[in-house]
Length: 267
Image (cartoon, rainbow, N blue to C red; front, side, top):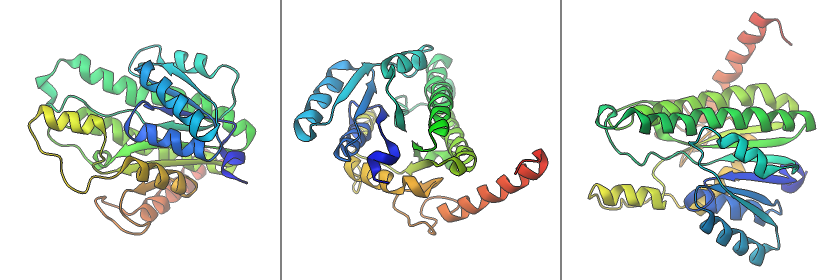
């Protein structure tokens, strides 16, 4: 199947107003799949949709949704309407705080959990079920190297990213027999407006050799069929910055999958 046949007829791209989300939207549209563009700011979304239509002739619709809001999933579902979603790109989830856990009110951390756990679970459950019924589709969860361990300034952020990693691995294991691809794309530092703003607020220079958002999108879409994990900058059998290579994690997931099936007496 072509990309459009495998992951169409529509894709959802979260956090599409800038950075990697914007690049994913353009890359997906270039592969002839129209996008439902989601982010908090409507203006940049509309500008991107017009740009994509002008460049590719591919249609896009937009919806201003705060993914940290309690009703985020309901608003996403309303924006999708009756469109069939064959690709879900969960790309929103940066931490704008850059603070120790007890130096901020608990509300800011609960927003991270709502966006990176609750909304994520609702979307993966709903749209994944529809993909399973059709027997094809994909879910690409854009992750961070913080998923491999916590540290100062990262307590809640790394916890949500670890959740994303394990969710992606479990869904890959469960859904691959149904023709659904699932990938946790684990990134290092990427040149996004959110990162630049955070560094500027803390008086830090822009590091060299940041990953390009356009390259991130191309690699992520290329690796989607080879889940459940891809570690940025490392081949499938290289550790890179991770404690395990992607191939080792894949083998581990398959081992756990086999053990779980024995326990629950499932084929």
